[in-house]
Image 1 (cartoon, each protein chain N blue to C red):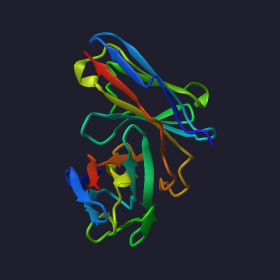
Image 2 (image 1 turned 60 degrees about the vertical axis):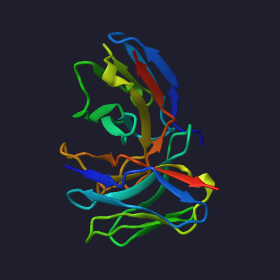
Image 3 (image 1 turned 90 degrees about the horizontal axis):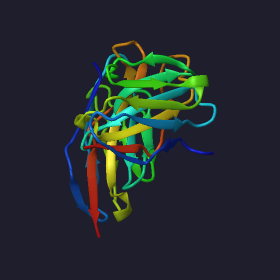
Image 4 (image 1 turned 120 degrees about the vertical axis):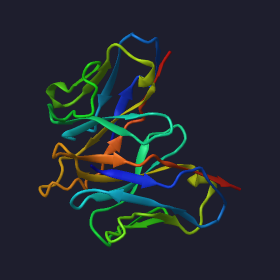
Length: 119
Length: 115
């Protein structure tokens, strides 16, 4: 079974430039997540999709970050314009639909991430 | 809101030593609890999980027990190997302020095992 694919693996941009990251989740996984992992910290949820609909984007800085998941499969995360503090690893994860009890005891599978450096 | 607190690292041990990484959590309701591991140069991988109180998750010699009374999920291994060197993240799946469920992670604990 193929895992979660992300690209690019690394990206270096200047502040105020724009950047986009791509994620292809595991086939059949309805739920897709984008996390931001700043060096030395744990991953922080940015946005969660269920199929092609957003179910939680409360922690997404919407003035500069945007994400979409067309057709409920691949997803892109964009930053425009980037700031120095956006330097981080951006992780994509996917999981099967949570159980009927609402308990997310199904495993979330993570991609290798995109390491963004803003200079 | 939900939060996870882990012991700070790095934790440095000799091979075959006993490992404990402490993890405590705050959450509403009844979260599921997870340990994820990140080996150098690789992505996050699920190590083990527990979905209800008193459950014990185990994998690759690692164990953790869901303790509701102490809101803890400490990771243990009886005899560590050099290959266990990695960053370990405790996480919970609980209801967020939005009402939706997602993973909340601790800050991670780096384990270094010396030969």
